[in-house]
Structure formats: structure tokens, C-alpha cells
Image 1 (cartoon, rainbow, N blue to C red):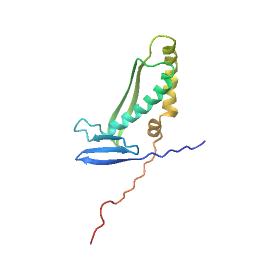
Image 2: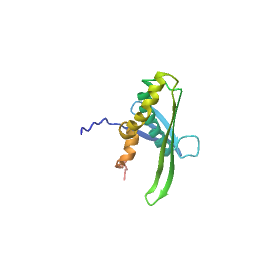
Image 3: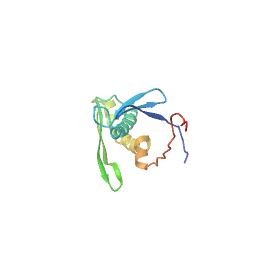
Image 4: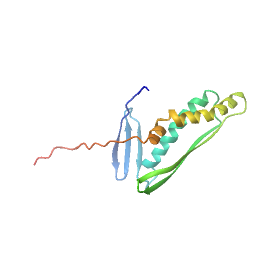
Length: 149
């Protein structure tokens, strides 16, 4: 099986106590925080990434046939603390998508279950990564000016 790679990178910067900004290589920026304010938390951003990834897949596959009348994907999960540490459990994605009456809408409705299956089993990088339990390595790079001792 071929192994295809396209490297991704971003940085997270502290902008204030409890507030951070993620910056991608294209200059995009999202702020997030600890949950004290309106900013998303990292856990919520993970759920957004799961929902957003499958939303893109489903939109690409179904909108070729018909534009949706309504398109919402809800992602729910329980945040638990147990012997495995803090993590999410019972992650569930609910697709609330409707298409107009007529042949084009019927075609989009007909492909929706297969599009969901393909997104879940093969296409959605975020969901696949979570389900495959991809290891994360850590590196501590010392920053700041050198000490003059």
C-alpha cells in the first residue's frame, strides 16, 4: 500500500494569560483559550476538526448532485477522566442534511450514506487519525537568550 505524505505545520503562541493563537503556514490565525470566555477550548477545536473534516468530505461528494437546503453536522462527546487520563469518549457525529425535492435532490440523498461511510472509513484525515490512535512525539526546544553565567 502506498504511503502518501504532505507535511503540515502550525504554531501556537501565547497572546495573554489563558489565551492562545494558532497560526498556520498560510497566515491563518485562530484564537482559543481555557474556556473562561467565548473562545473555543482545544477540546472543542478537536471536535470542530472532526466535524469540519467530514463536513468538507460530505459537501464535496453530495453537492456535485444537488445543493443542500440545510447542512449541519453535530459532534458530541463526553470528556472523561479515568485510569487512561483525560480524554473524550462516546464521540458521535450526527448528520442533519436535507436536499430539495426532485431528481438532483434524490441523487444527493441516495449517495449520502455512502459518502458518510467513505468519510468515516477513508477520507476524513482528522477522524482517521483519532481512530488510528496516532502516537504524538514531544520535543522541548530551549528558547530565549543564552545565560551569561
